Image (cartoon, rainbow, N blue to C red; front, side, top):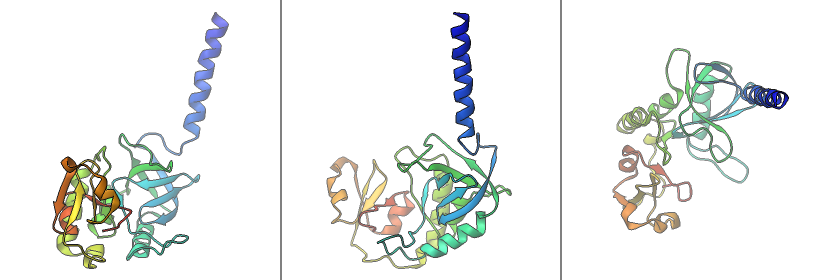
Length: 213
């Protein structure tokens, strides 16, 4: 029994060491080095781990057969100015990874500023919360409202094909064009109507990726 118990303990120790070695940071207090910036909301760490900024979406850049969105390259450039080649601090909450396996994190500069918040305040990203919410929801939403009122970045560009109204889903925190099939599927109890895109975004709703309102 003593031998078996010893082997079990050793197995646990070895697995723990392997797990800690497989990630590039341990807890929020550790700093990590940003090797590369992919776009306005995604970075690559020193050992190749991809990190997706939690709670925001930047405009898309061209990728394969997709043409990209206005200010996609500008958002990428601004992200590079902020973090590329620098040490940053990652803070995670209860949602650790996205559906692609990328780490989800709030990224902080050495001076304490949050990169997610900077990009939103400058109009280089939309707030986009998940159903689980966000530890910094109020902070990011305040930054977005400021950017909307000031007409910065993405908020200086008129929406493509504006609609007479938009349909939001209280459960998913997404809003859609009236003709969007995803919007049509939602239950009436979750439905909320917005007069404009900015009204929806001021309430923390995020654009549907299908219809891109």
